[in-house]
Length: 401
Ligand code: SF4
Figure 1 (tube, helix red, strand yellow):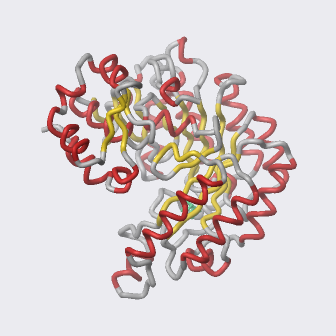
Figure 2 (cartoon, rainbow, N blue to C red):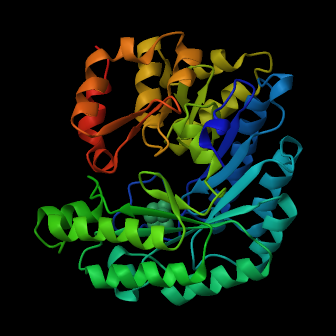
């Protein structure tokens, strides 16, 4: 599929639902997720559905069907199956057979009842968080599952008829060798998932790993090992027919994650749930990340039935109407993540300007350095292989002002 044909138009909107619960916190994780009581999870879903209804009332009639739906977290399968069913039933009227509907699953939490619910509510894509096929590495990361749990879940999902599965894997895990990483890649490839997300570990402030790192207790990969693993990912996945369509994402033909492409193309999406971000009509906003604040925000606005989306969103602490310059910057930063790059005519249609006039120096400089490529035939600008590796350096020149 040509990713350019998936560029959003203003009629498209996607939905993200955040489930901020996990069995326990992984040692490297800085996502908004916590272990929580069943009672709290039930009351959270109740508030979340009120929030959904609040935004739903503000969406205009031509936006009834979501282009994509993504239930992520956290660990959505930390919710009892019937709670996921309640969410699915509530959003069902906004889903068509065309909607890509993904749910994140963490091994060790998936039950047969969850799988039944997925099928009933229209889930057609699964994203499984494996990270590593080595149980010692999984333990080191603080994951709750073994490789065998993952494989068992994967096979059950396949047997249940899911034909679009992503597997998340991680490099630069403390103590991981190129050989053990290669073994993870090979084990995953034997299963033939449609999509693989391959990220390297980032040590985030505020996590136990950060403190361990500061105390010199983490055996992390040196630059050469990191480079070896990076190169191994590219070559092994390419050999098996996976197309690298984004810096860290690989898929079989036509199995790119449409939901993420909406983000990277600067498309509209509504985020529902604790701390969830949205981008609608040039406005970026995020729900409070504190449970009490979140509940207060929803309860206050849920009752005010006549409000417009922008009016509600502007009450949020995190809300911003993007300036034209900011929109252009984001378009460049996100669009260049895609290996297909940015189409010059799409830029012109969206901003009414010529990309070479907006960025006369940056584009020329990085083309001369061999980091960007101007494909005149297709009218696009994209990262060369080396450019992808040095993307942060290149992108820093696309900040306006
Ligand atoms: S399962 Fe994912 S979201 Fe939950 S703690 Fe681990 S890394 Fe974070």
